[in-house]
Image (cartoon, rainbow, N blue to C red; front, side, top):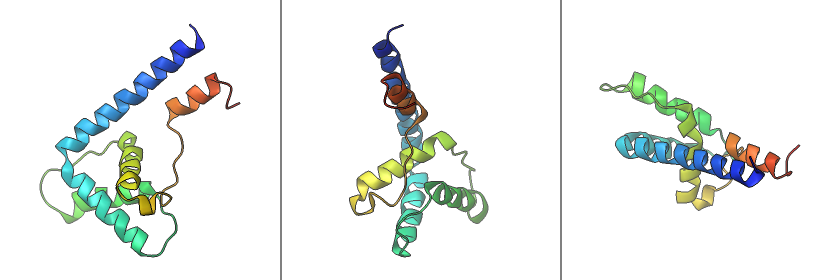
Amino acid sequence: METEDKVDILKEKIQARKNEWVNWHNKNPSIWLAFEKFSLEAAASGRPRYSHWAVMNRVRWHTTIETTGKEFKISNDHIAFYARAFCAKHPQHKEFFRFKPLKEELEIRRLRGLEP
């Protein structure tokens, strides 16, 4: 298989992951509201950076311990997309979270000779 064919497959995988997150996100708007609220609180604390994993774990705590009702299972695969969405919506905090490339993005860079 040619390199660009492999790259196209990886790009499709990235898009599929994004689509899965968008579908889940649209069905669970309260998770976004909590993630956004807790992220803004962390930013207001004066920290130059913070962990989007820590924010999502606070969301998990809030939805399972502090509230009643249906328990949400939040996939770890969704956390990076929530953080990216937060930075897109709040560009004043675009560097608040540190992002690693998605595993497919890393593989694309490797295939193109940009990573060892």
